[in-house]
Image (tube, rainbow, N blue to C red; front, side, top):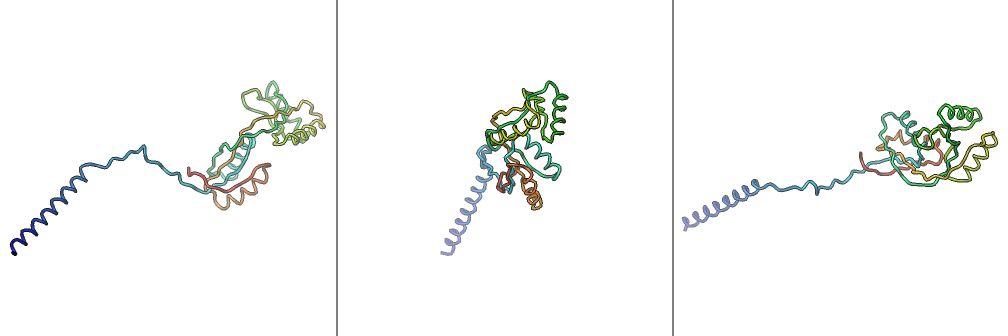
Length: 197
């Protein structure tokens, strides 16, 4: 009886070792296939400050101020919405020297303006401001006409507004940004989440 027990024990151990070796070879021989096109990366979220909404001239000025104040700041300018605005302007001049002379004349009268520098129909026009409200634009036009500028016009324009997204701002940046936002009319600062760069 002892001999049968020992033989059965050896047979069971041999069977167990044999099946274990067989399955180990099967696992090592056929690698598991991975389909990289089916892998979906979930974007990581980070804290952001959202500053907007700016029309084109405003966003360029805001970016210049940000770069001066915070040279190492990481931010993006993104489109936020479309709106109708009222542009107060003096039609284009034949060259930039004539436009600059008009700007100097306006500056002497205390009127803030700048020369339009794009390459389309508005090049060398003089911009006197963008307004969200038509009544505000008309009020400004009347003020300018009282100062002797009679060739200014108002045009209704569809404008793409932009926002500045500041990624992972430090606490000091948040405090200083609040003060900066107060200097830009019709803009606001909000804290939110955005995708990590």
